[in-house]
Image 1 (cartoon, rainbow, N blue to C red):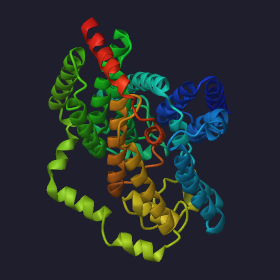
Image 2: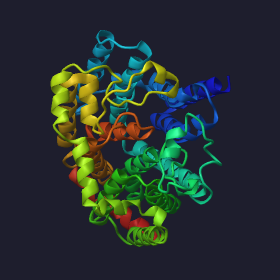
Image 3: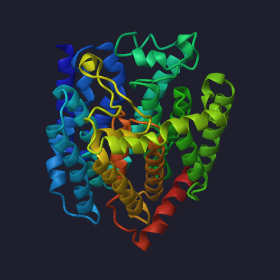
Image 4: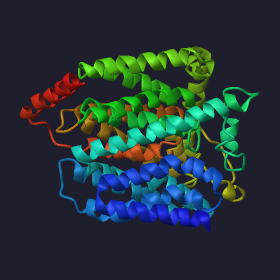
Length: 441
């Protein structure tokens, strides 16, 4: 009953605050997403649906309004893409054979979070700033949990059970629990690192345009916590994307005065901390060319094209690698799975589903290029991060199922797909605001 009550509370809170304003509803869902892993590990039962309950609450509060919003440039096309990406798996759900509950899990993985594309399209500059501030607070809180787990081990927050079994198999050190990859409050370390990296473009954008000194200090602390969190998690793909973001921010031309000093201090502190503890240095395995070659060959090979020929309409919506809850494992027969998101799409949605997703990704990149009317650095960083994750989908799965990383990714994609061009007169005042903040620090 406790688990059901928690889910009902998450739905009600997301609905209530979502009715008040879009950004508040998003902040609630983000908070639930951040807490999802640790709550599910400690409260058995319906908490497996906790994040879904909060998402449903936000959709109930906002989705109808979003669907009827005025058409900004690109919004109609985004609605068409969202409808197509939802409709095809839904058709397959009704026509492909398989266990209904397992297929429902697969349908949820392929479809459930896609409306965040339309939610993101409704974010204006003020809403993006407020959401970024919420992300900053959440990343700091998650960083505190991560530091405690890094120091004292996972068992104080994640008791061993069927729910946390995979988490305890994800180790940096095979002999000690304290040497494990750190999940903070998330389901696993990869979800933690991926969410940190996906929120960083929003935090960077708010940091550059911080409205007060206290906001600037909070966002600076969030940057440090986020960067360290990625290294504590030990997930390699987020580390690569993080390196790209660091280069883009450093070379952006938007750092001045206070921003430069703060950025240099953050980088120096993170670099010193990482260099002082081997547990933070899992990224050095990226120097192993044989490992990289083996990983690439296992994900991208001729088997991919064989799958396209063997399963032109897929083999079921959970048949490509979608994570099945432990209580449904007896209904699911594991088959061949490739660590490749595009192969997962082929196995679950067939050739048509694959082409829909490839065309959509290309459309997003094309729409994301060019000047815009709000938070320009954040938009460029969101585009770069989304593009990087689209590319790295070749070597991993979970693009649509990582809580809450997938939600943040889709919010960002929706946001960069519809915004207006920048009026030339707006450029100078924005830069003056950054200089004023630097001079007041």
